[in-house]
Image (cartoon, rainbow, N blue to C red; front, side, top):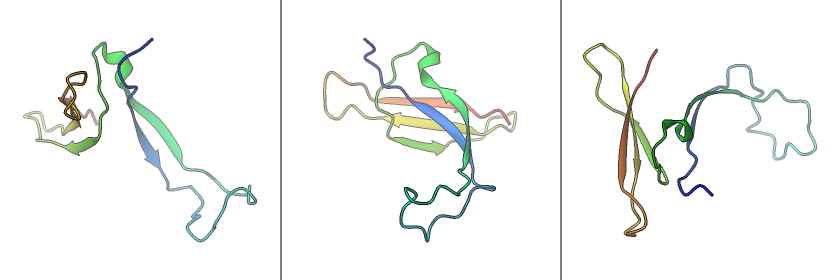
Length: 92
């Protein structure tokens, strides 16, 4: 089996989705348009161990003008886990 966590980052578009904030349940109402999402990154494909990523923020801007995205996982004070900071270049 796989020991690492599966981490996926999606871009979500709510511009055409139905506003459901006043709807207490969607179980009875099937007439709604869901938000759409596009997979941007599947960390399984990086070929590295990834622990439980619990934080994400934009980081510094690179010299080429691209933003960076920083993901962080802590080790929960466990010798079986890793603290990780993963830095990604955001390609527009």
